[in-house]
Length: 126
Image 1 (cartoon, rainbow, N blue to C red):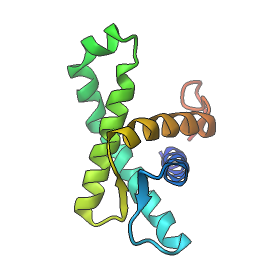
Image 2: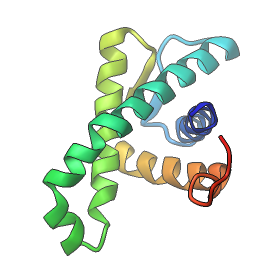
Image 3: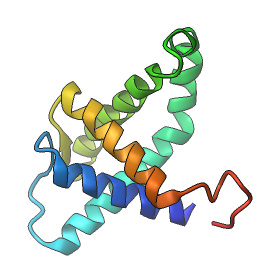
């Protein structure tokens, strides 16, 4: 679980660095930004554990019809919800809109896949 949080934080960092629509708010130092990314990674991890399965179940027809591409929409929705939650908690991280959320979801997925590998799928230790 710790490894997954580190990977998610790194993936969120890459998305925040690459996309102008995903940004830090009021975080000037590297330490503040690292703490913010850690909090965002925990929030997204909790949303992926509790909210994403419900969204996937409710929209399973769309997921099947689009051959899984609708999962990208769900990931973008989770990213937008995480942005809203972080704003409500006073965490300085924001996603500007749906366009940024879609591209950000793609970047986060690719970076997390590259950094995380297939450790969890093939009996690797966390």
